[in-house]
Length: 129
Image (cartoon, rainbow, N blue to C red; front, side, top):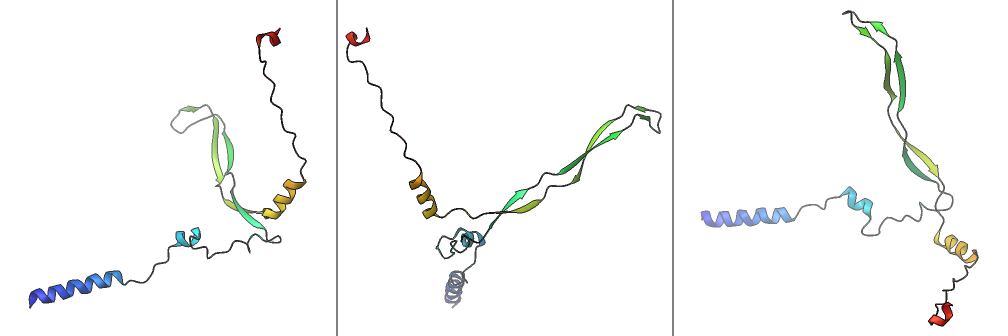
C-alpha cells in the first residue's frame, strides 16, 4: 500500500514539473528568433531612429590657495579635480538608413572602375638588356 502511494505520488510530481506555463524570456523576444517582430515599420522613410550616446562627465578644477592649517602645517596649495555632474545617456535623433534598393541604385549609377592590367613579365634574359 505504501509503495503504491509513493509511486503514484512520484508520478504526480513528475507530471506537474513538465506541465508548467510557458515562460516569456525578454532576451528571446528581443532576439526575434521566430521572426515575429517586423522592423520594416521602424525603418520607414519618415521615421527617425534614436541612438543612445553617453555624455562626458562635467569636471571642474578647483584651486586651493597656499595657507597654514589649524595644526600649524603649511599647505603649499594646488588643484583638486571634482566631478560636478556625472555622465548621462542621451538619445540623439538620426535619419533612417537607406533601403537596399536605394543602395543598389547608387552603386549602379557610380562610375565603373577600370580593370588594372597586370605587368608583363620578361620571358628571357635577352629581354632584360
